[in-house]
Amino acid sequence: MELDDFDRRLLDALQQDSRRTGEQLAALVGLSPAACLRRAQKLREAGVIEREIAVVSPKAIGRRLMMVLTVTLEGEQQHVFEDFERQVRRAPEVTACYHVTGATDYVLVIATADMEEYQDFAKRLMFGKHMKRFEAMVVIDRVKFDTTQPID
Amino acid sequence: MELDDFDRRLLDALQQDSRRTGEQLAALVGLSPAACLRRAQKLREAGVIEREIAVVSPKAIGRRLMMVLTVTLEGEQQHVFEDFERQVRRAPEVTACYHVTGATDYVLVIATADMEEYQDFAKRLMFGKHMKRFEAMVVIDRVKFDTTQPID
DNA sequence: ACTGAAAGTCGCGGCAC
DNA sequence: GTGCCGCGACTTTCAGT
Image 1 (tube, rainbow over the protein chains, first blue to last red):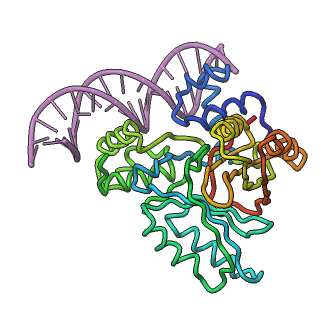
Image 2 (image 1 turned 135 degrees about the horizontal axis):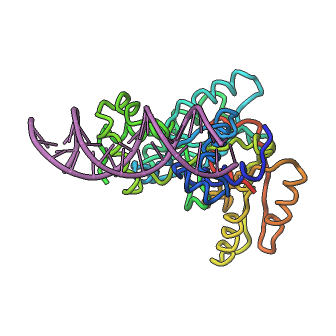
Image 3 (image 1 turned 90 degrees about the vertical axis):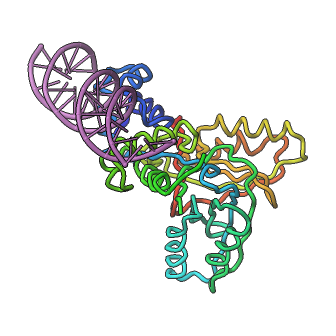
């Protein structure tokens, strides 16, 4: 899909706040309310807007401890990676997970209530048969942040 | 703020799709549409719902290359970190940034069009005076993903 | 205090231009 | 692409538990 300047401004506006009304959008992008909403709808259908979601505060739902993990798996077999990814998708503690090249295989961001819950999680996912190595870093501050926080 | 089971189900539903109507929410959480919307509003005001946003496909806006960077800065002075964080917040390529403890200081996720744009970015942020070390990992796949993708 | 139902208001999604 | 209009969705009110 081809995007023009209006689309880009529209996306920018909706990315900050998807509840903005047609009128508010119109003021921001320089089109009529109707045009803005019509374009927004098109962007949804085209998959440019993947979805619209509520960002839930991890703290507010009792997840006060966030960590970034780097993970390296043993071997190169497809099924090892697939199994790991399946577990990651199921785990509500995981807010983000990237499969990467380089020194490590995966980078995860997780949010738990406390150290106990973290260790619980680590036991489940980080001490599997094919785990080669993993490193944990405690998050001091979210300078820019992830948004998907599964709740239990 | 105290959350009950209804709130949790509500958050779960809105986190997946913030455009669900009162009626749809009612069916999911087991309350009337009005009650659902009332609660949703309260959750916004209390900051449990931090914001509601559109998730834009990085690919669709021409950012086909994603990377995870680990960054270590020189020295421990406050202003060095502050300067770095200010730059990060300004940089549209950065979709997520965590300040962490441990071997490295920051973990960033960035999205660029291609290697050229990445190098451009790296020159701007990664070769500053106080940069001690940084490592880049190319993202193969987003297993679970970040959502804030600034557009230009 | 919070629910559920109904009235009131606002914003969205067609149609004409 | 803009402006109007009917309709659906949200908000507020109110009575009940």
